Image (spheres, rainbow, N blue to C red):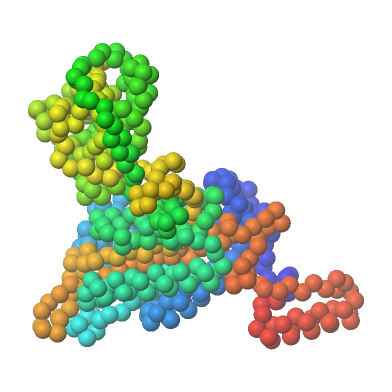
Length: 513
Ligand code: ATP
Ligand code: MG
């Protein structure tokens, strides 16, 4: 291929387009992709793949296809345009929110552009499969996904239209589904290895399903949006999910008499702790959330933050947010800053209280007195208030220890390029994907889903492999593997030699520029 014929556009893109979203420029992979003419931005989160970029994208696609086929997976192509009815059936039309791109046809029928394909594939399988003899199988596709991301940024890393490889496994039993999951885990490991990437596999949040049946594949990069907590012992998790360490703080301190003290106008833990000359670790922080319309009080040690993903999972909530000052005042009659668990059971409006494990071992703690300008000191669990159940709800942080082995956790950043997930019967139940077992019993198909952000893999590869001179391609993804440079194209003899070398290399199976 002649460079001059390869449509390698290294001119800066038109200014008006560049200006649409400056956030892209914050990341080196976008700058290099744009400068080398791999992609061009059309609008925020929407990109054109030029020949050079598409060559790389297709290489990633082929590596994935090879590994999927090795596991016996079958390729399909499902529609991007999806009827609302299927999404209502799964219950997601109402809860998916603004990320779902919704539209109407000329007859006012509603559709969405698929951000993912569980509905379509489960519906198709439900219509086709009858017998246990037809199971198991794994279907996969390469398909453009649409997500109206709240913050599209970093080029194709987080865009609104991107290429995904998604796969769905269908099994008879939970045990079989675990095997499919393991197969995909292995295939994904090979895929990212073959792409030449340095990556880690971390335990991820598996939402309402629970268990350790969700893993994310993270390409290690400083600029990654995901935070990873890992330990020498092998434990590694997305900090969205990482187990919180409980400081036992099991001191021999004697329980003192509880007192109400005036803390006029001091609301924040910082202010009250300096006023009372006590560490934030002595505090029981009381936060009020609105969980699917109901009030919930959440207790955590004063120096820790709540991990709202863990909280939502624990409460099985689809709609969780902090209550506003106004709502708290209206419903509980207390101002933010003076809230606490003591006496909440006597409140007119019943409020559920959930507590993080971090408060379990506190002695003579401090908490709001549910009265403006007052706090309680020397508060002790069981004596002064009771908690039915302690849950791990904290966000892990630097300095925390591994809950599995006790050593200090390490923190690093990564780019999530793949996500595997054991779904169980979540979709087969709602979409009616059943089969008849050998004994004639009707059973739900057990599913798994598996995604790779193909476009994101390209950007992540560049993010991990570049220097001041530009992109350093892993051999397997390089758009061209060999460049032949004729140092004087006016010299006919030399030009012939160069052309000859090019032709021979091309014949030998290399991509030559
Ligand atoms: P994220 O947490 O980054 O938003 P996600 O959990 O929404 O990702 P999944 O629904 O698991 O992602 O999608 C599978 C894969 O698709 C992800 O692992 C990621 O590589 C890719 N992906 C997700 N959203 C985007 C996006 N907006 N642009 C490009 N790739 C994406
Ligand atoms: Mg997302």
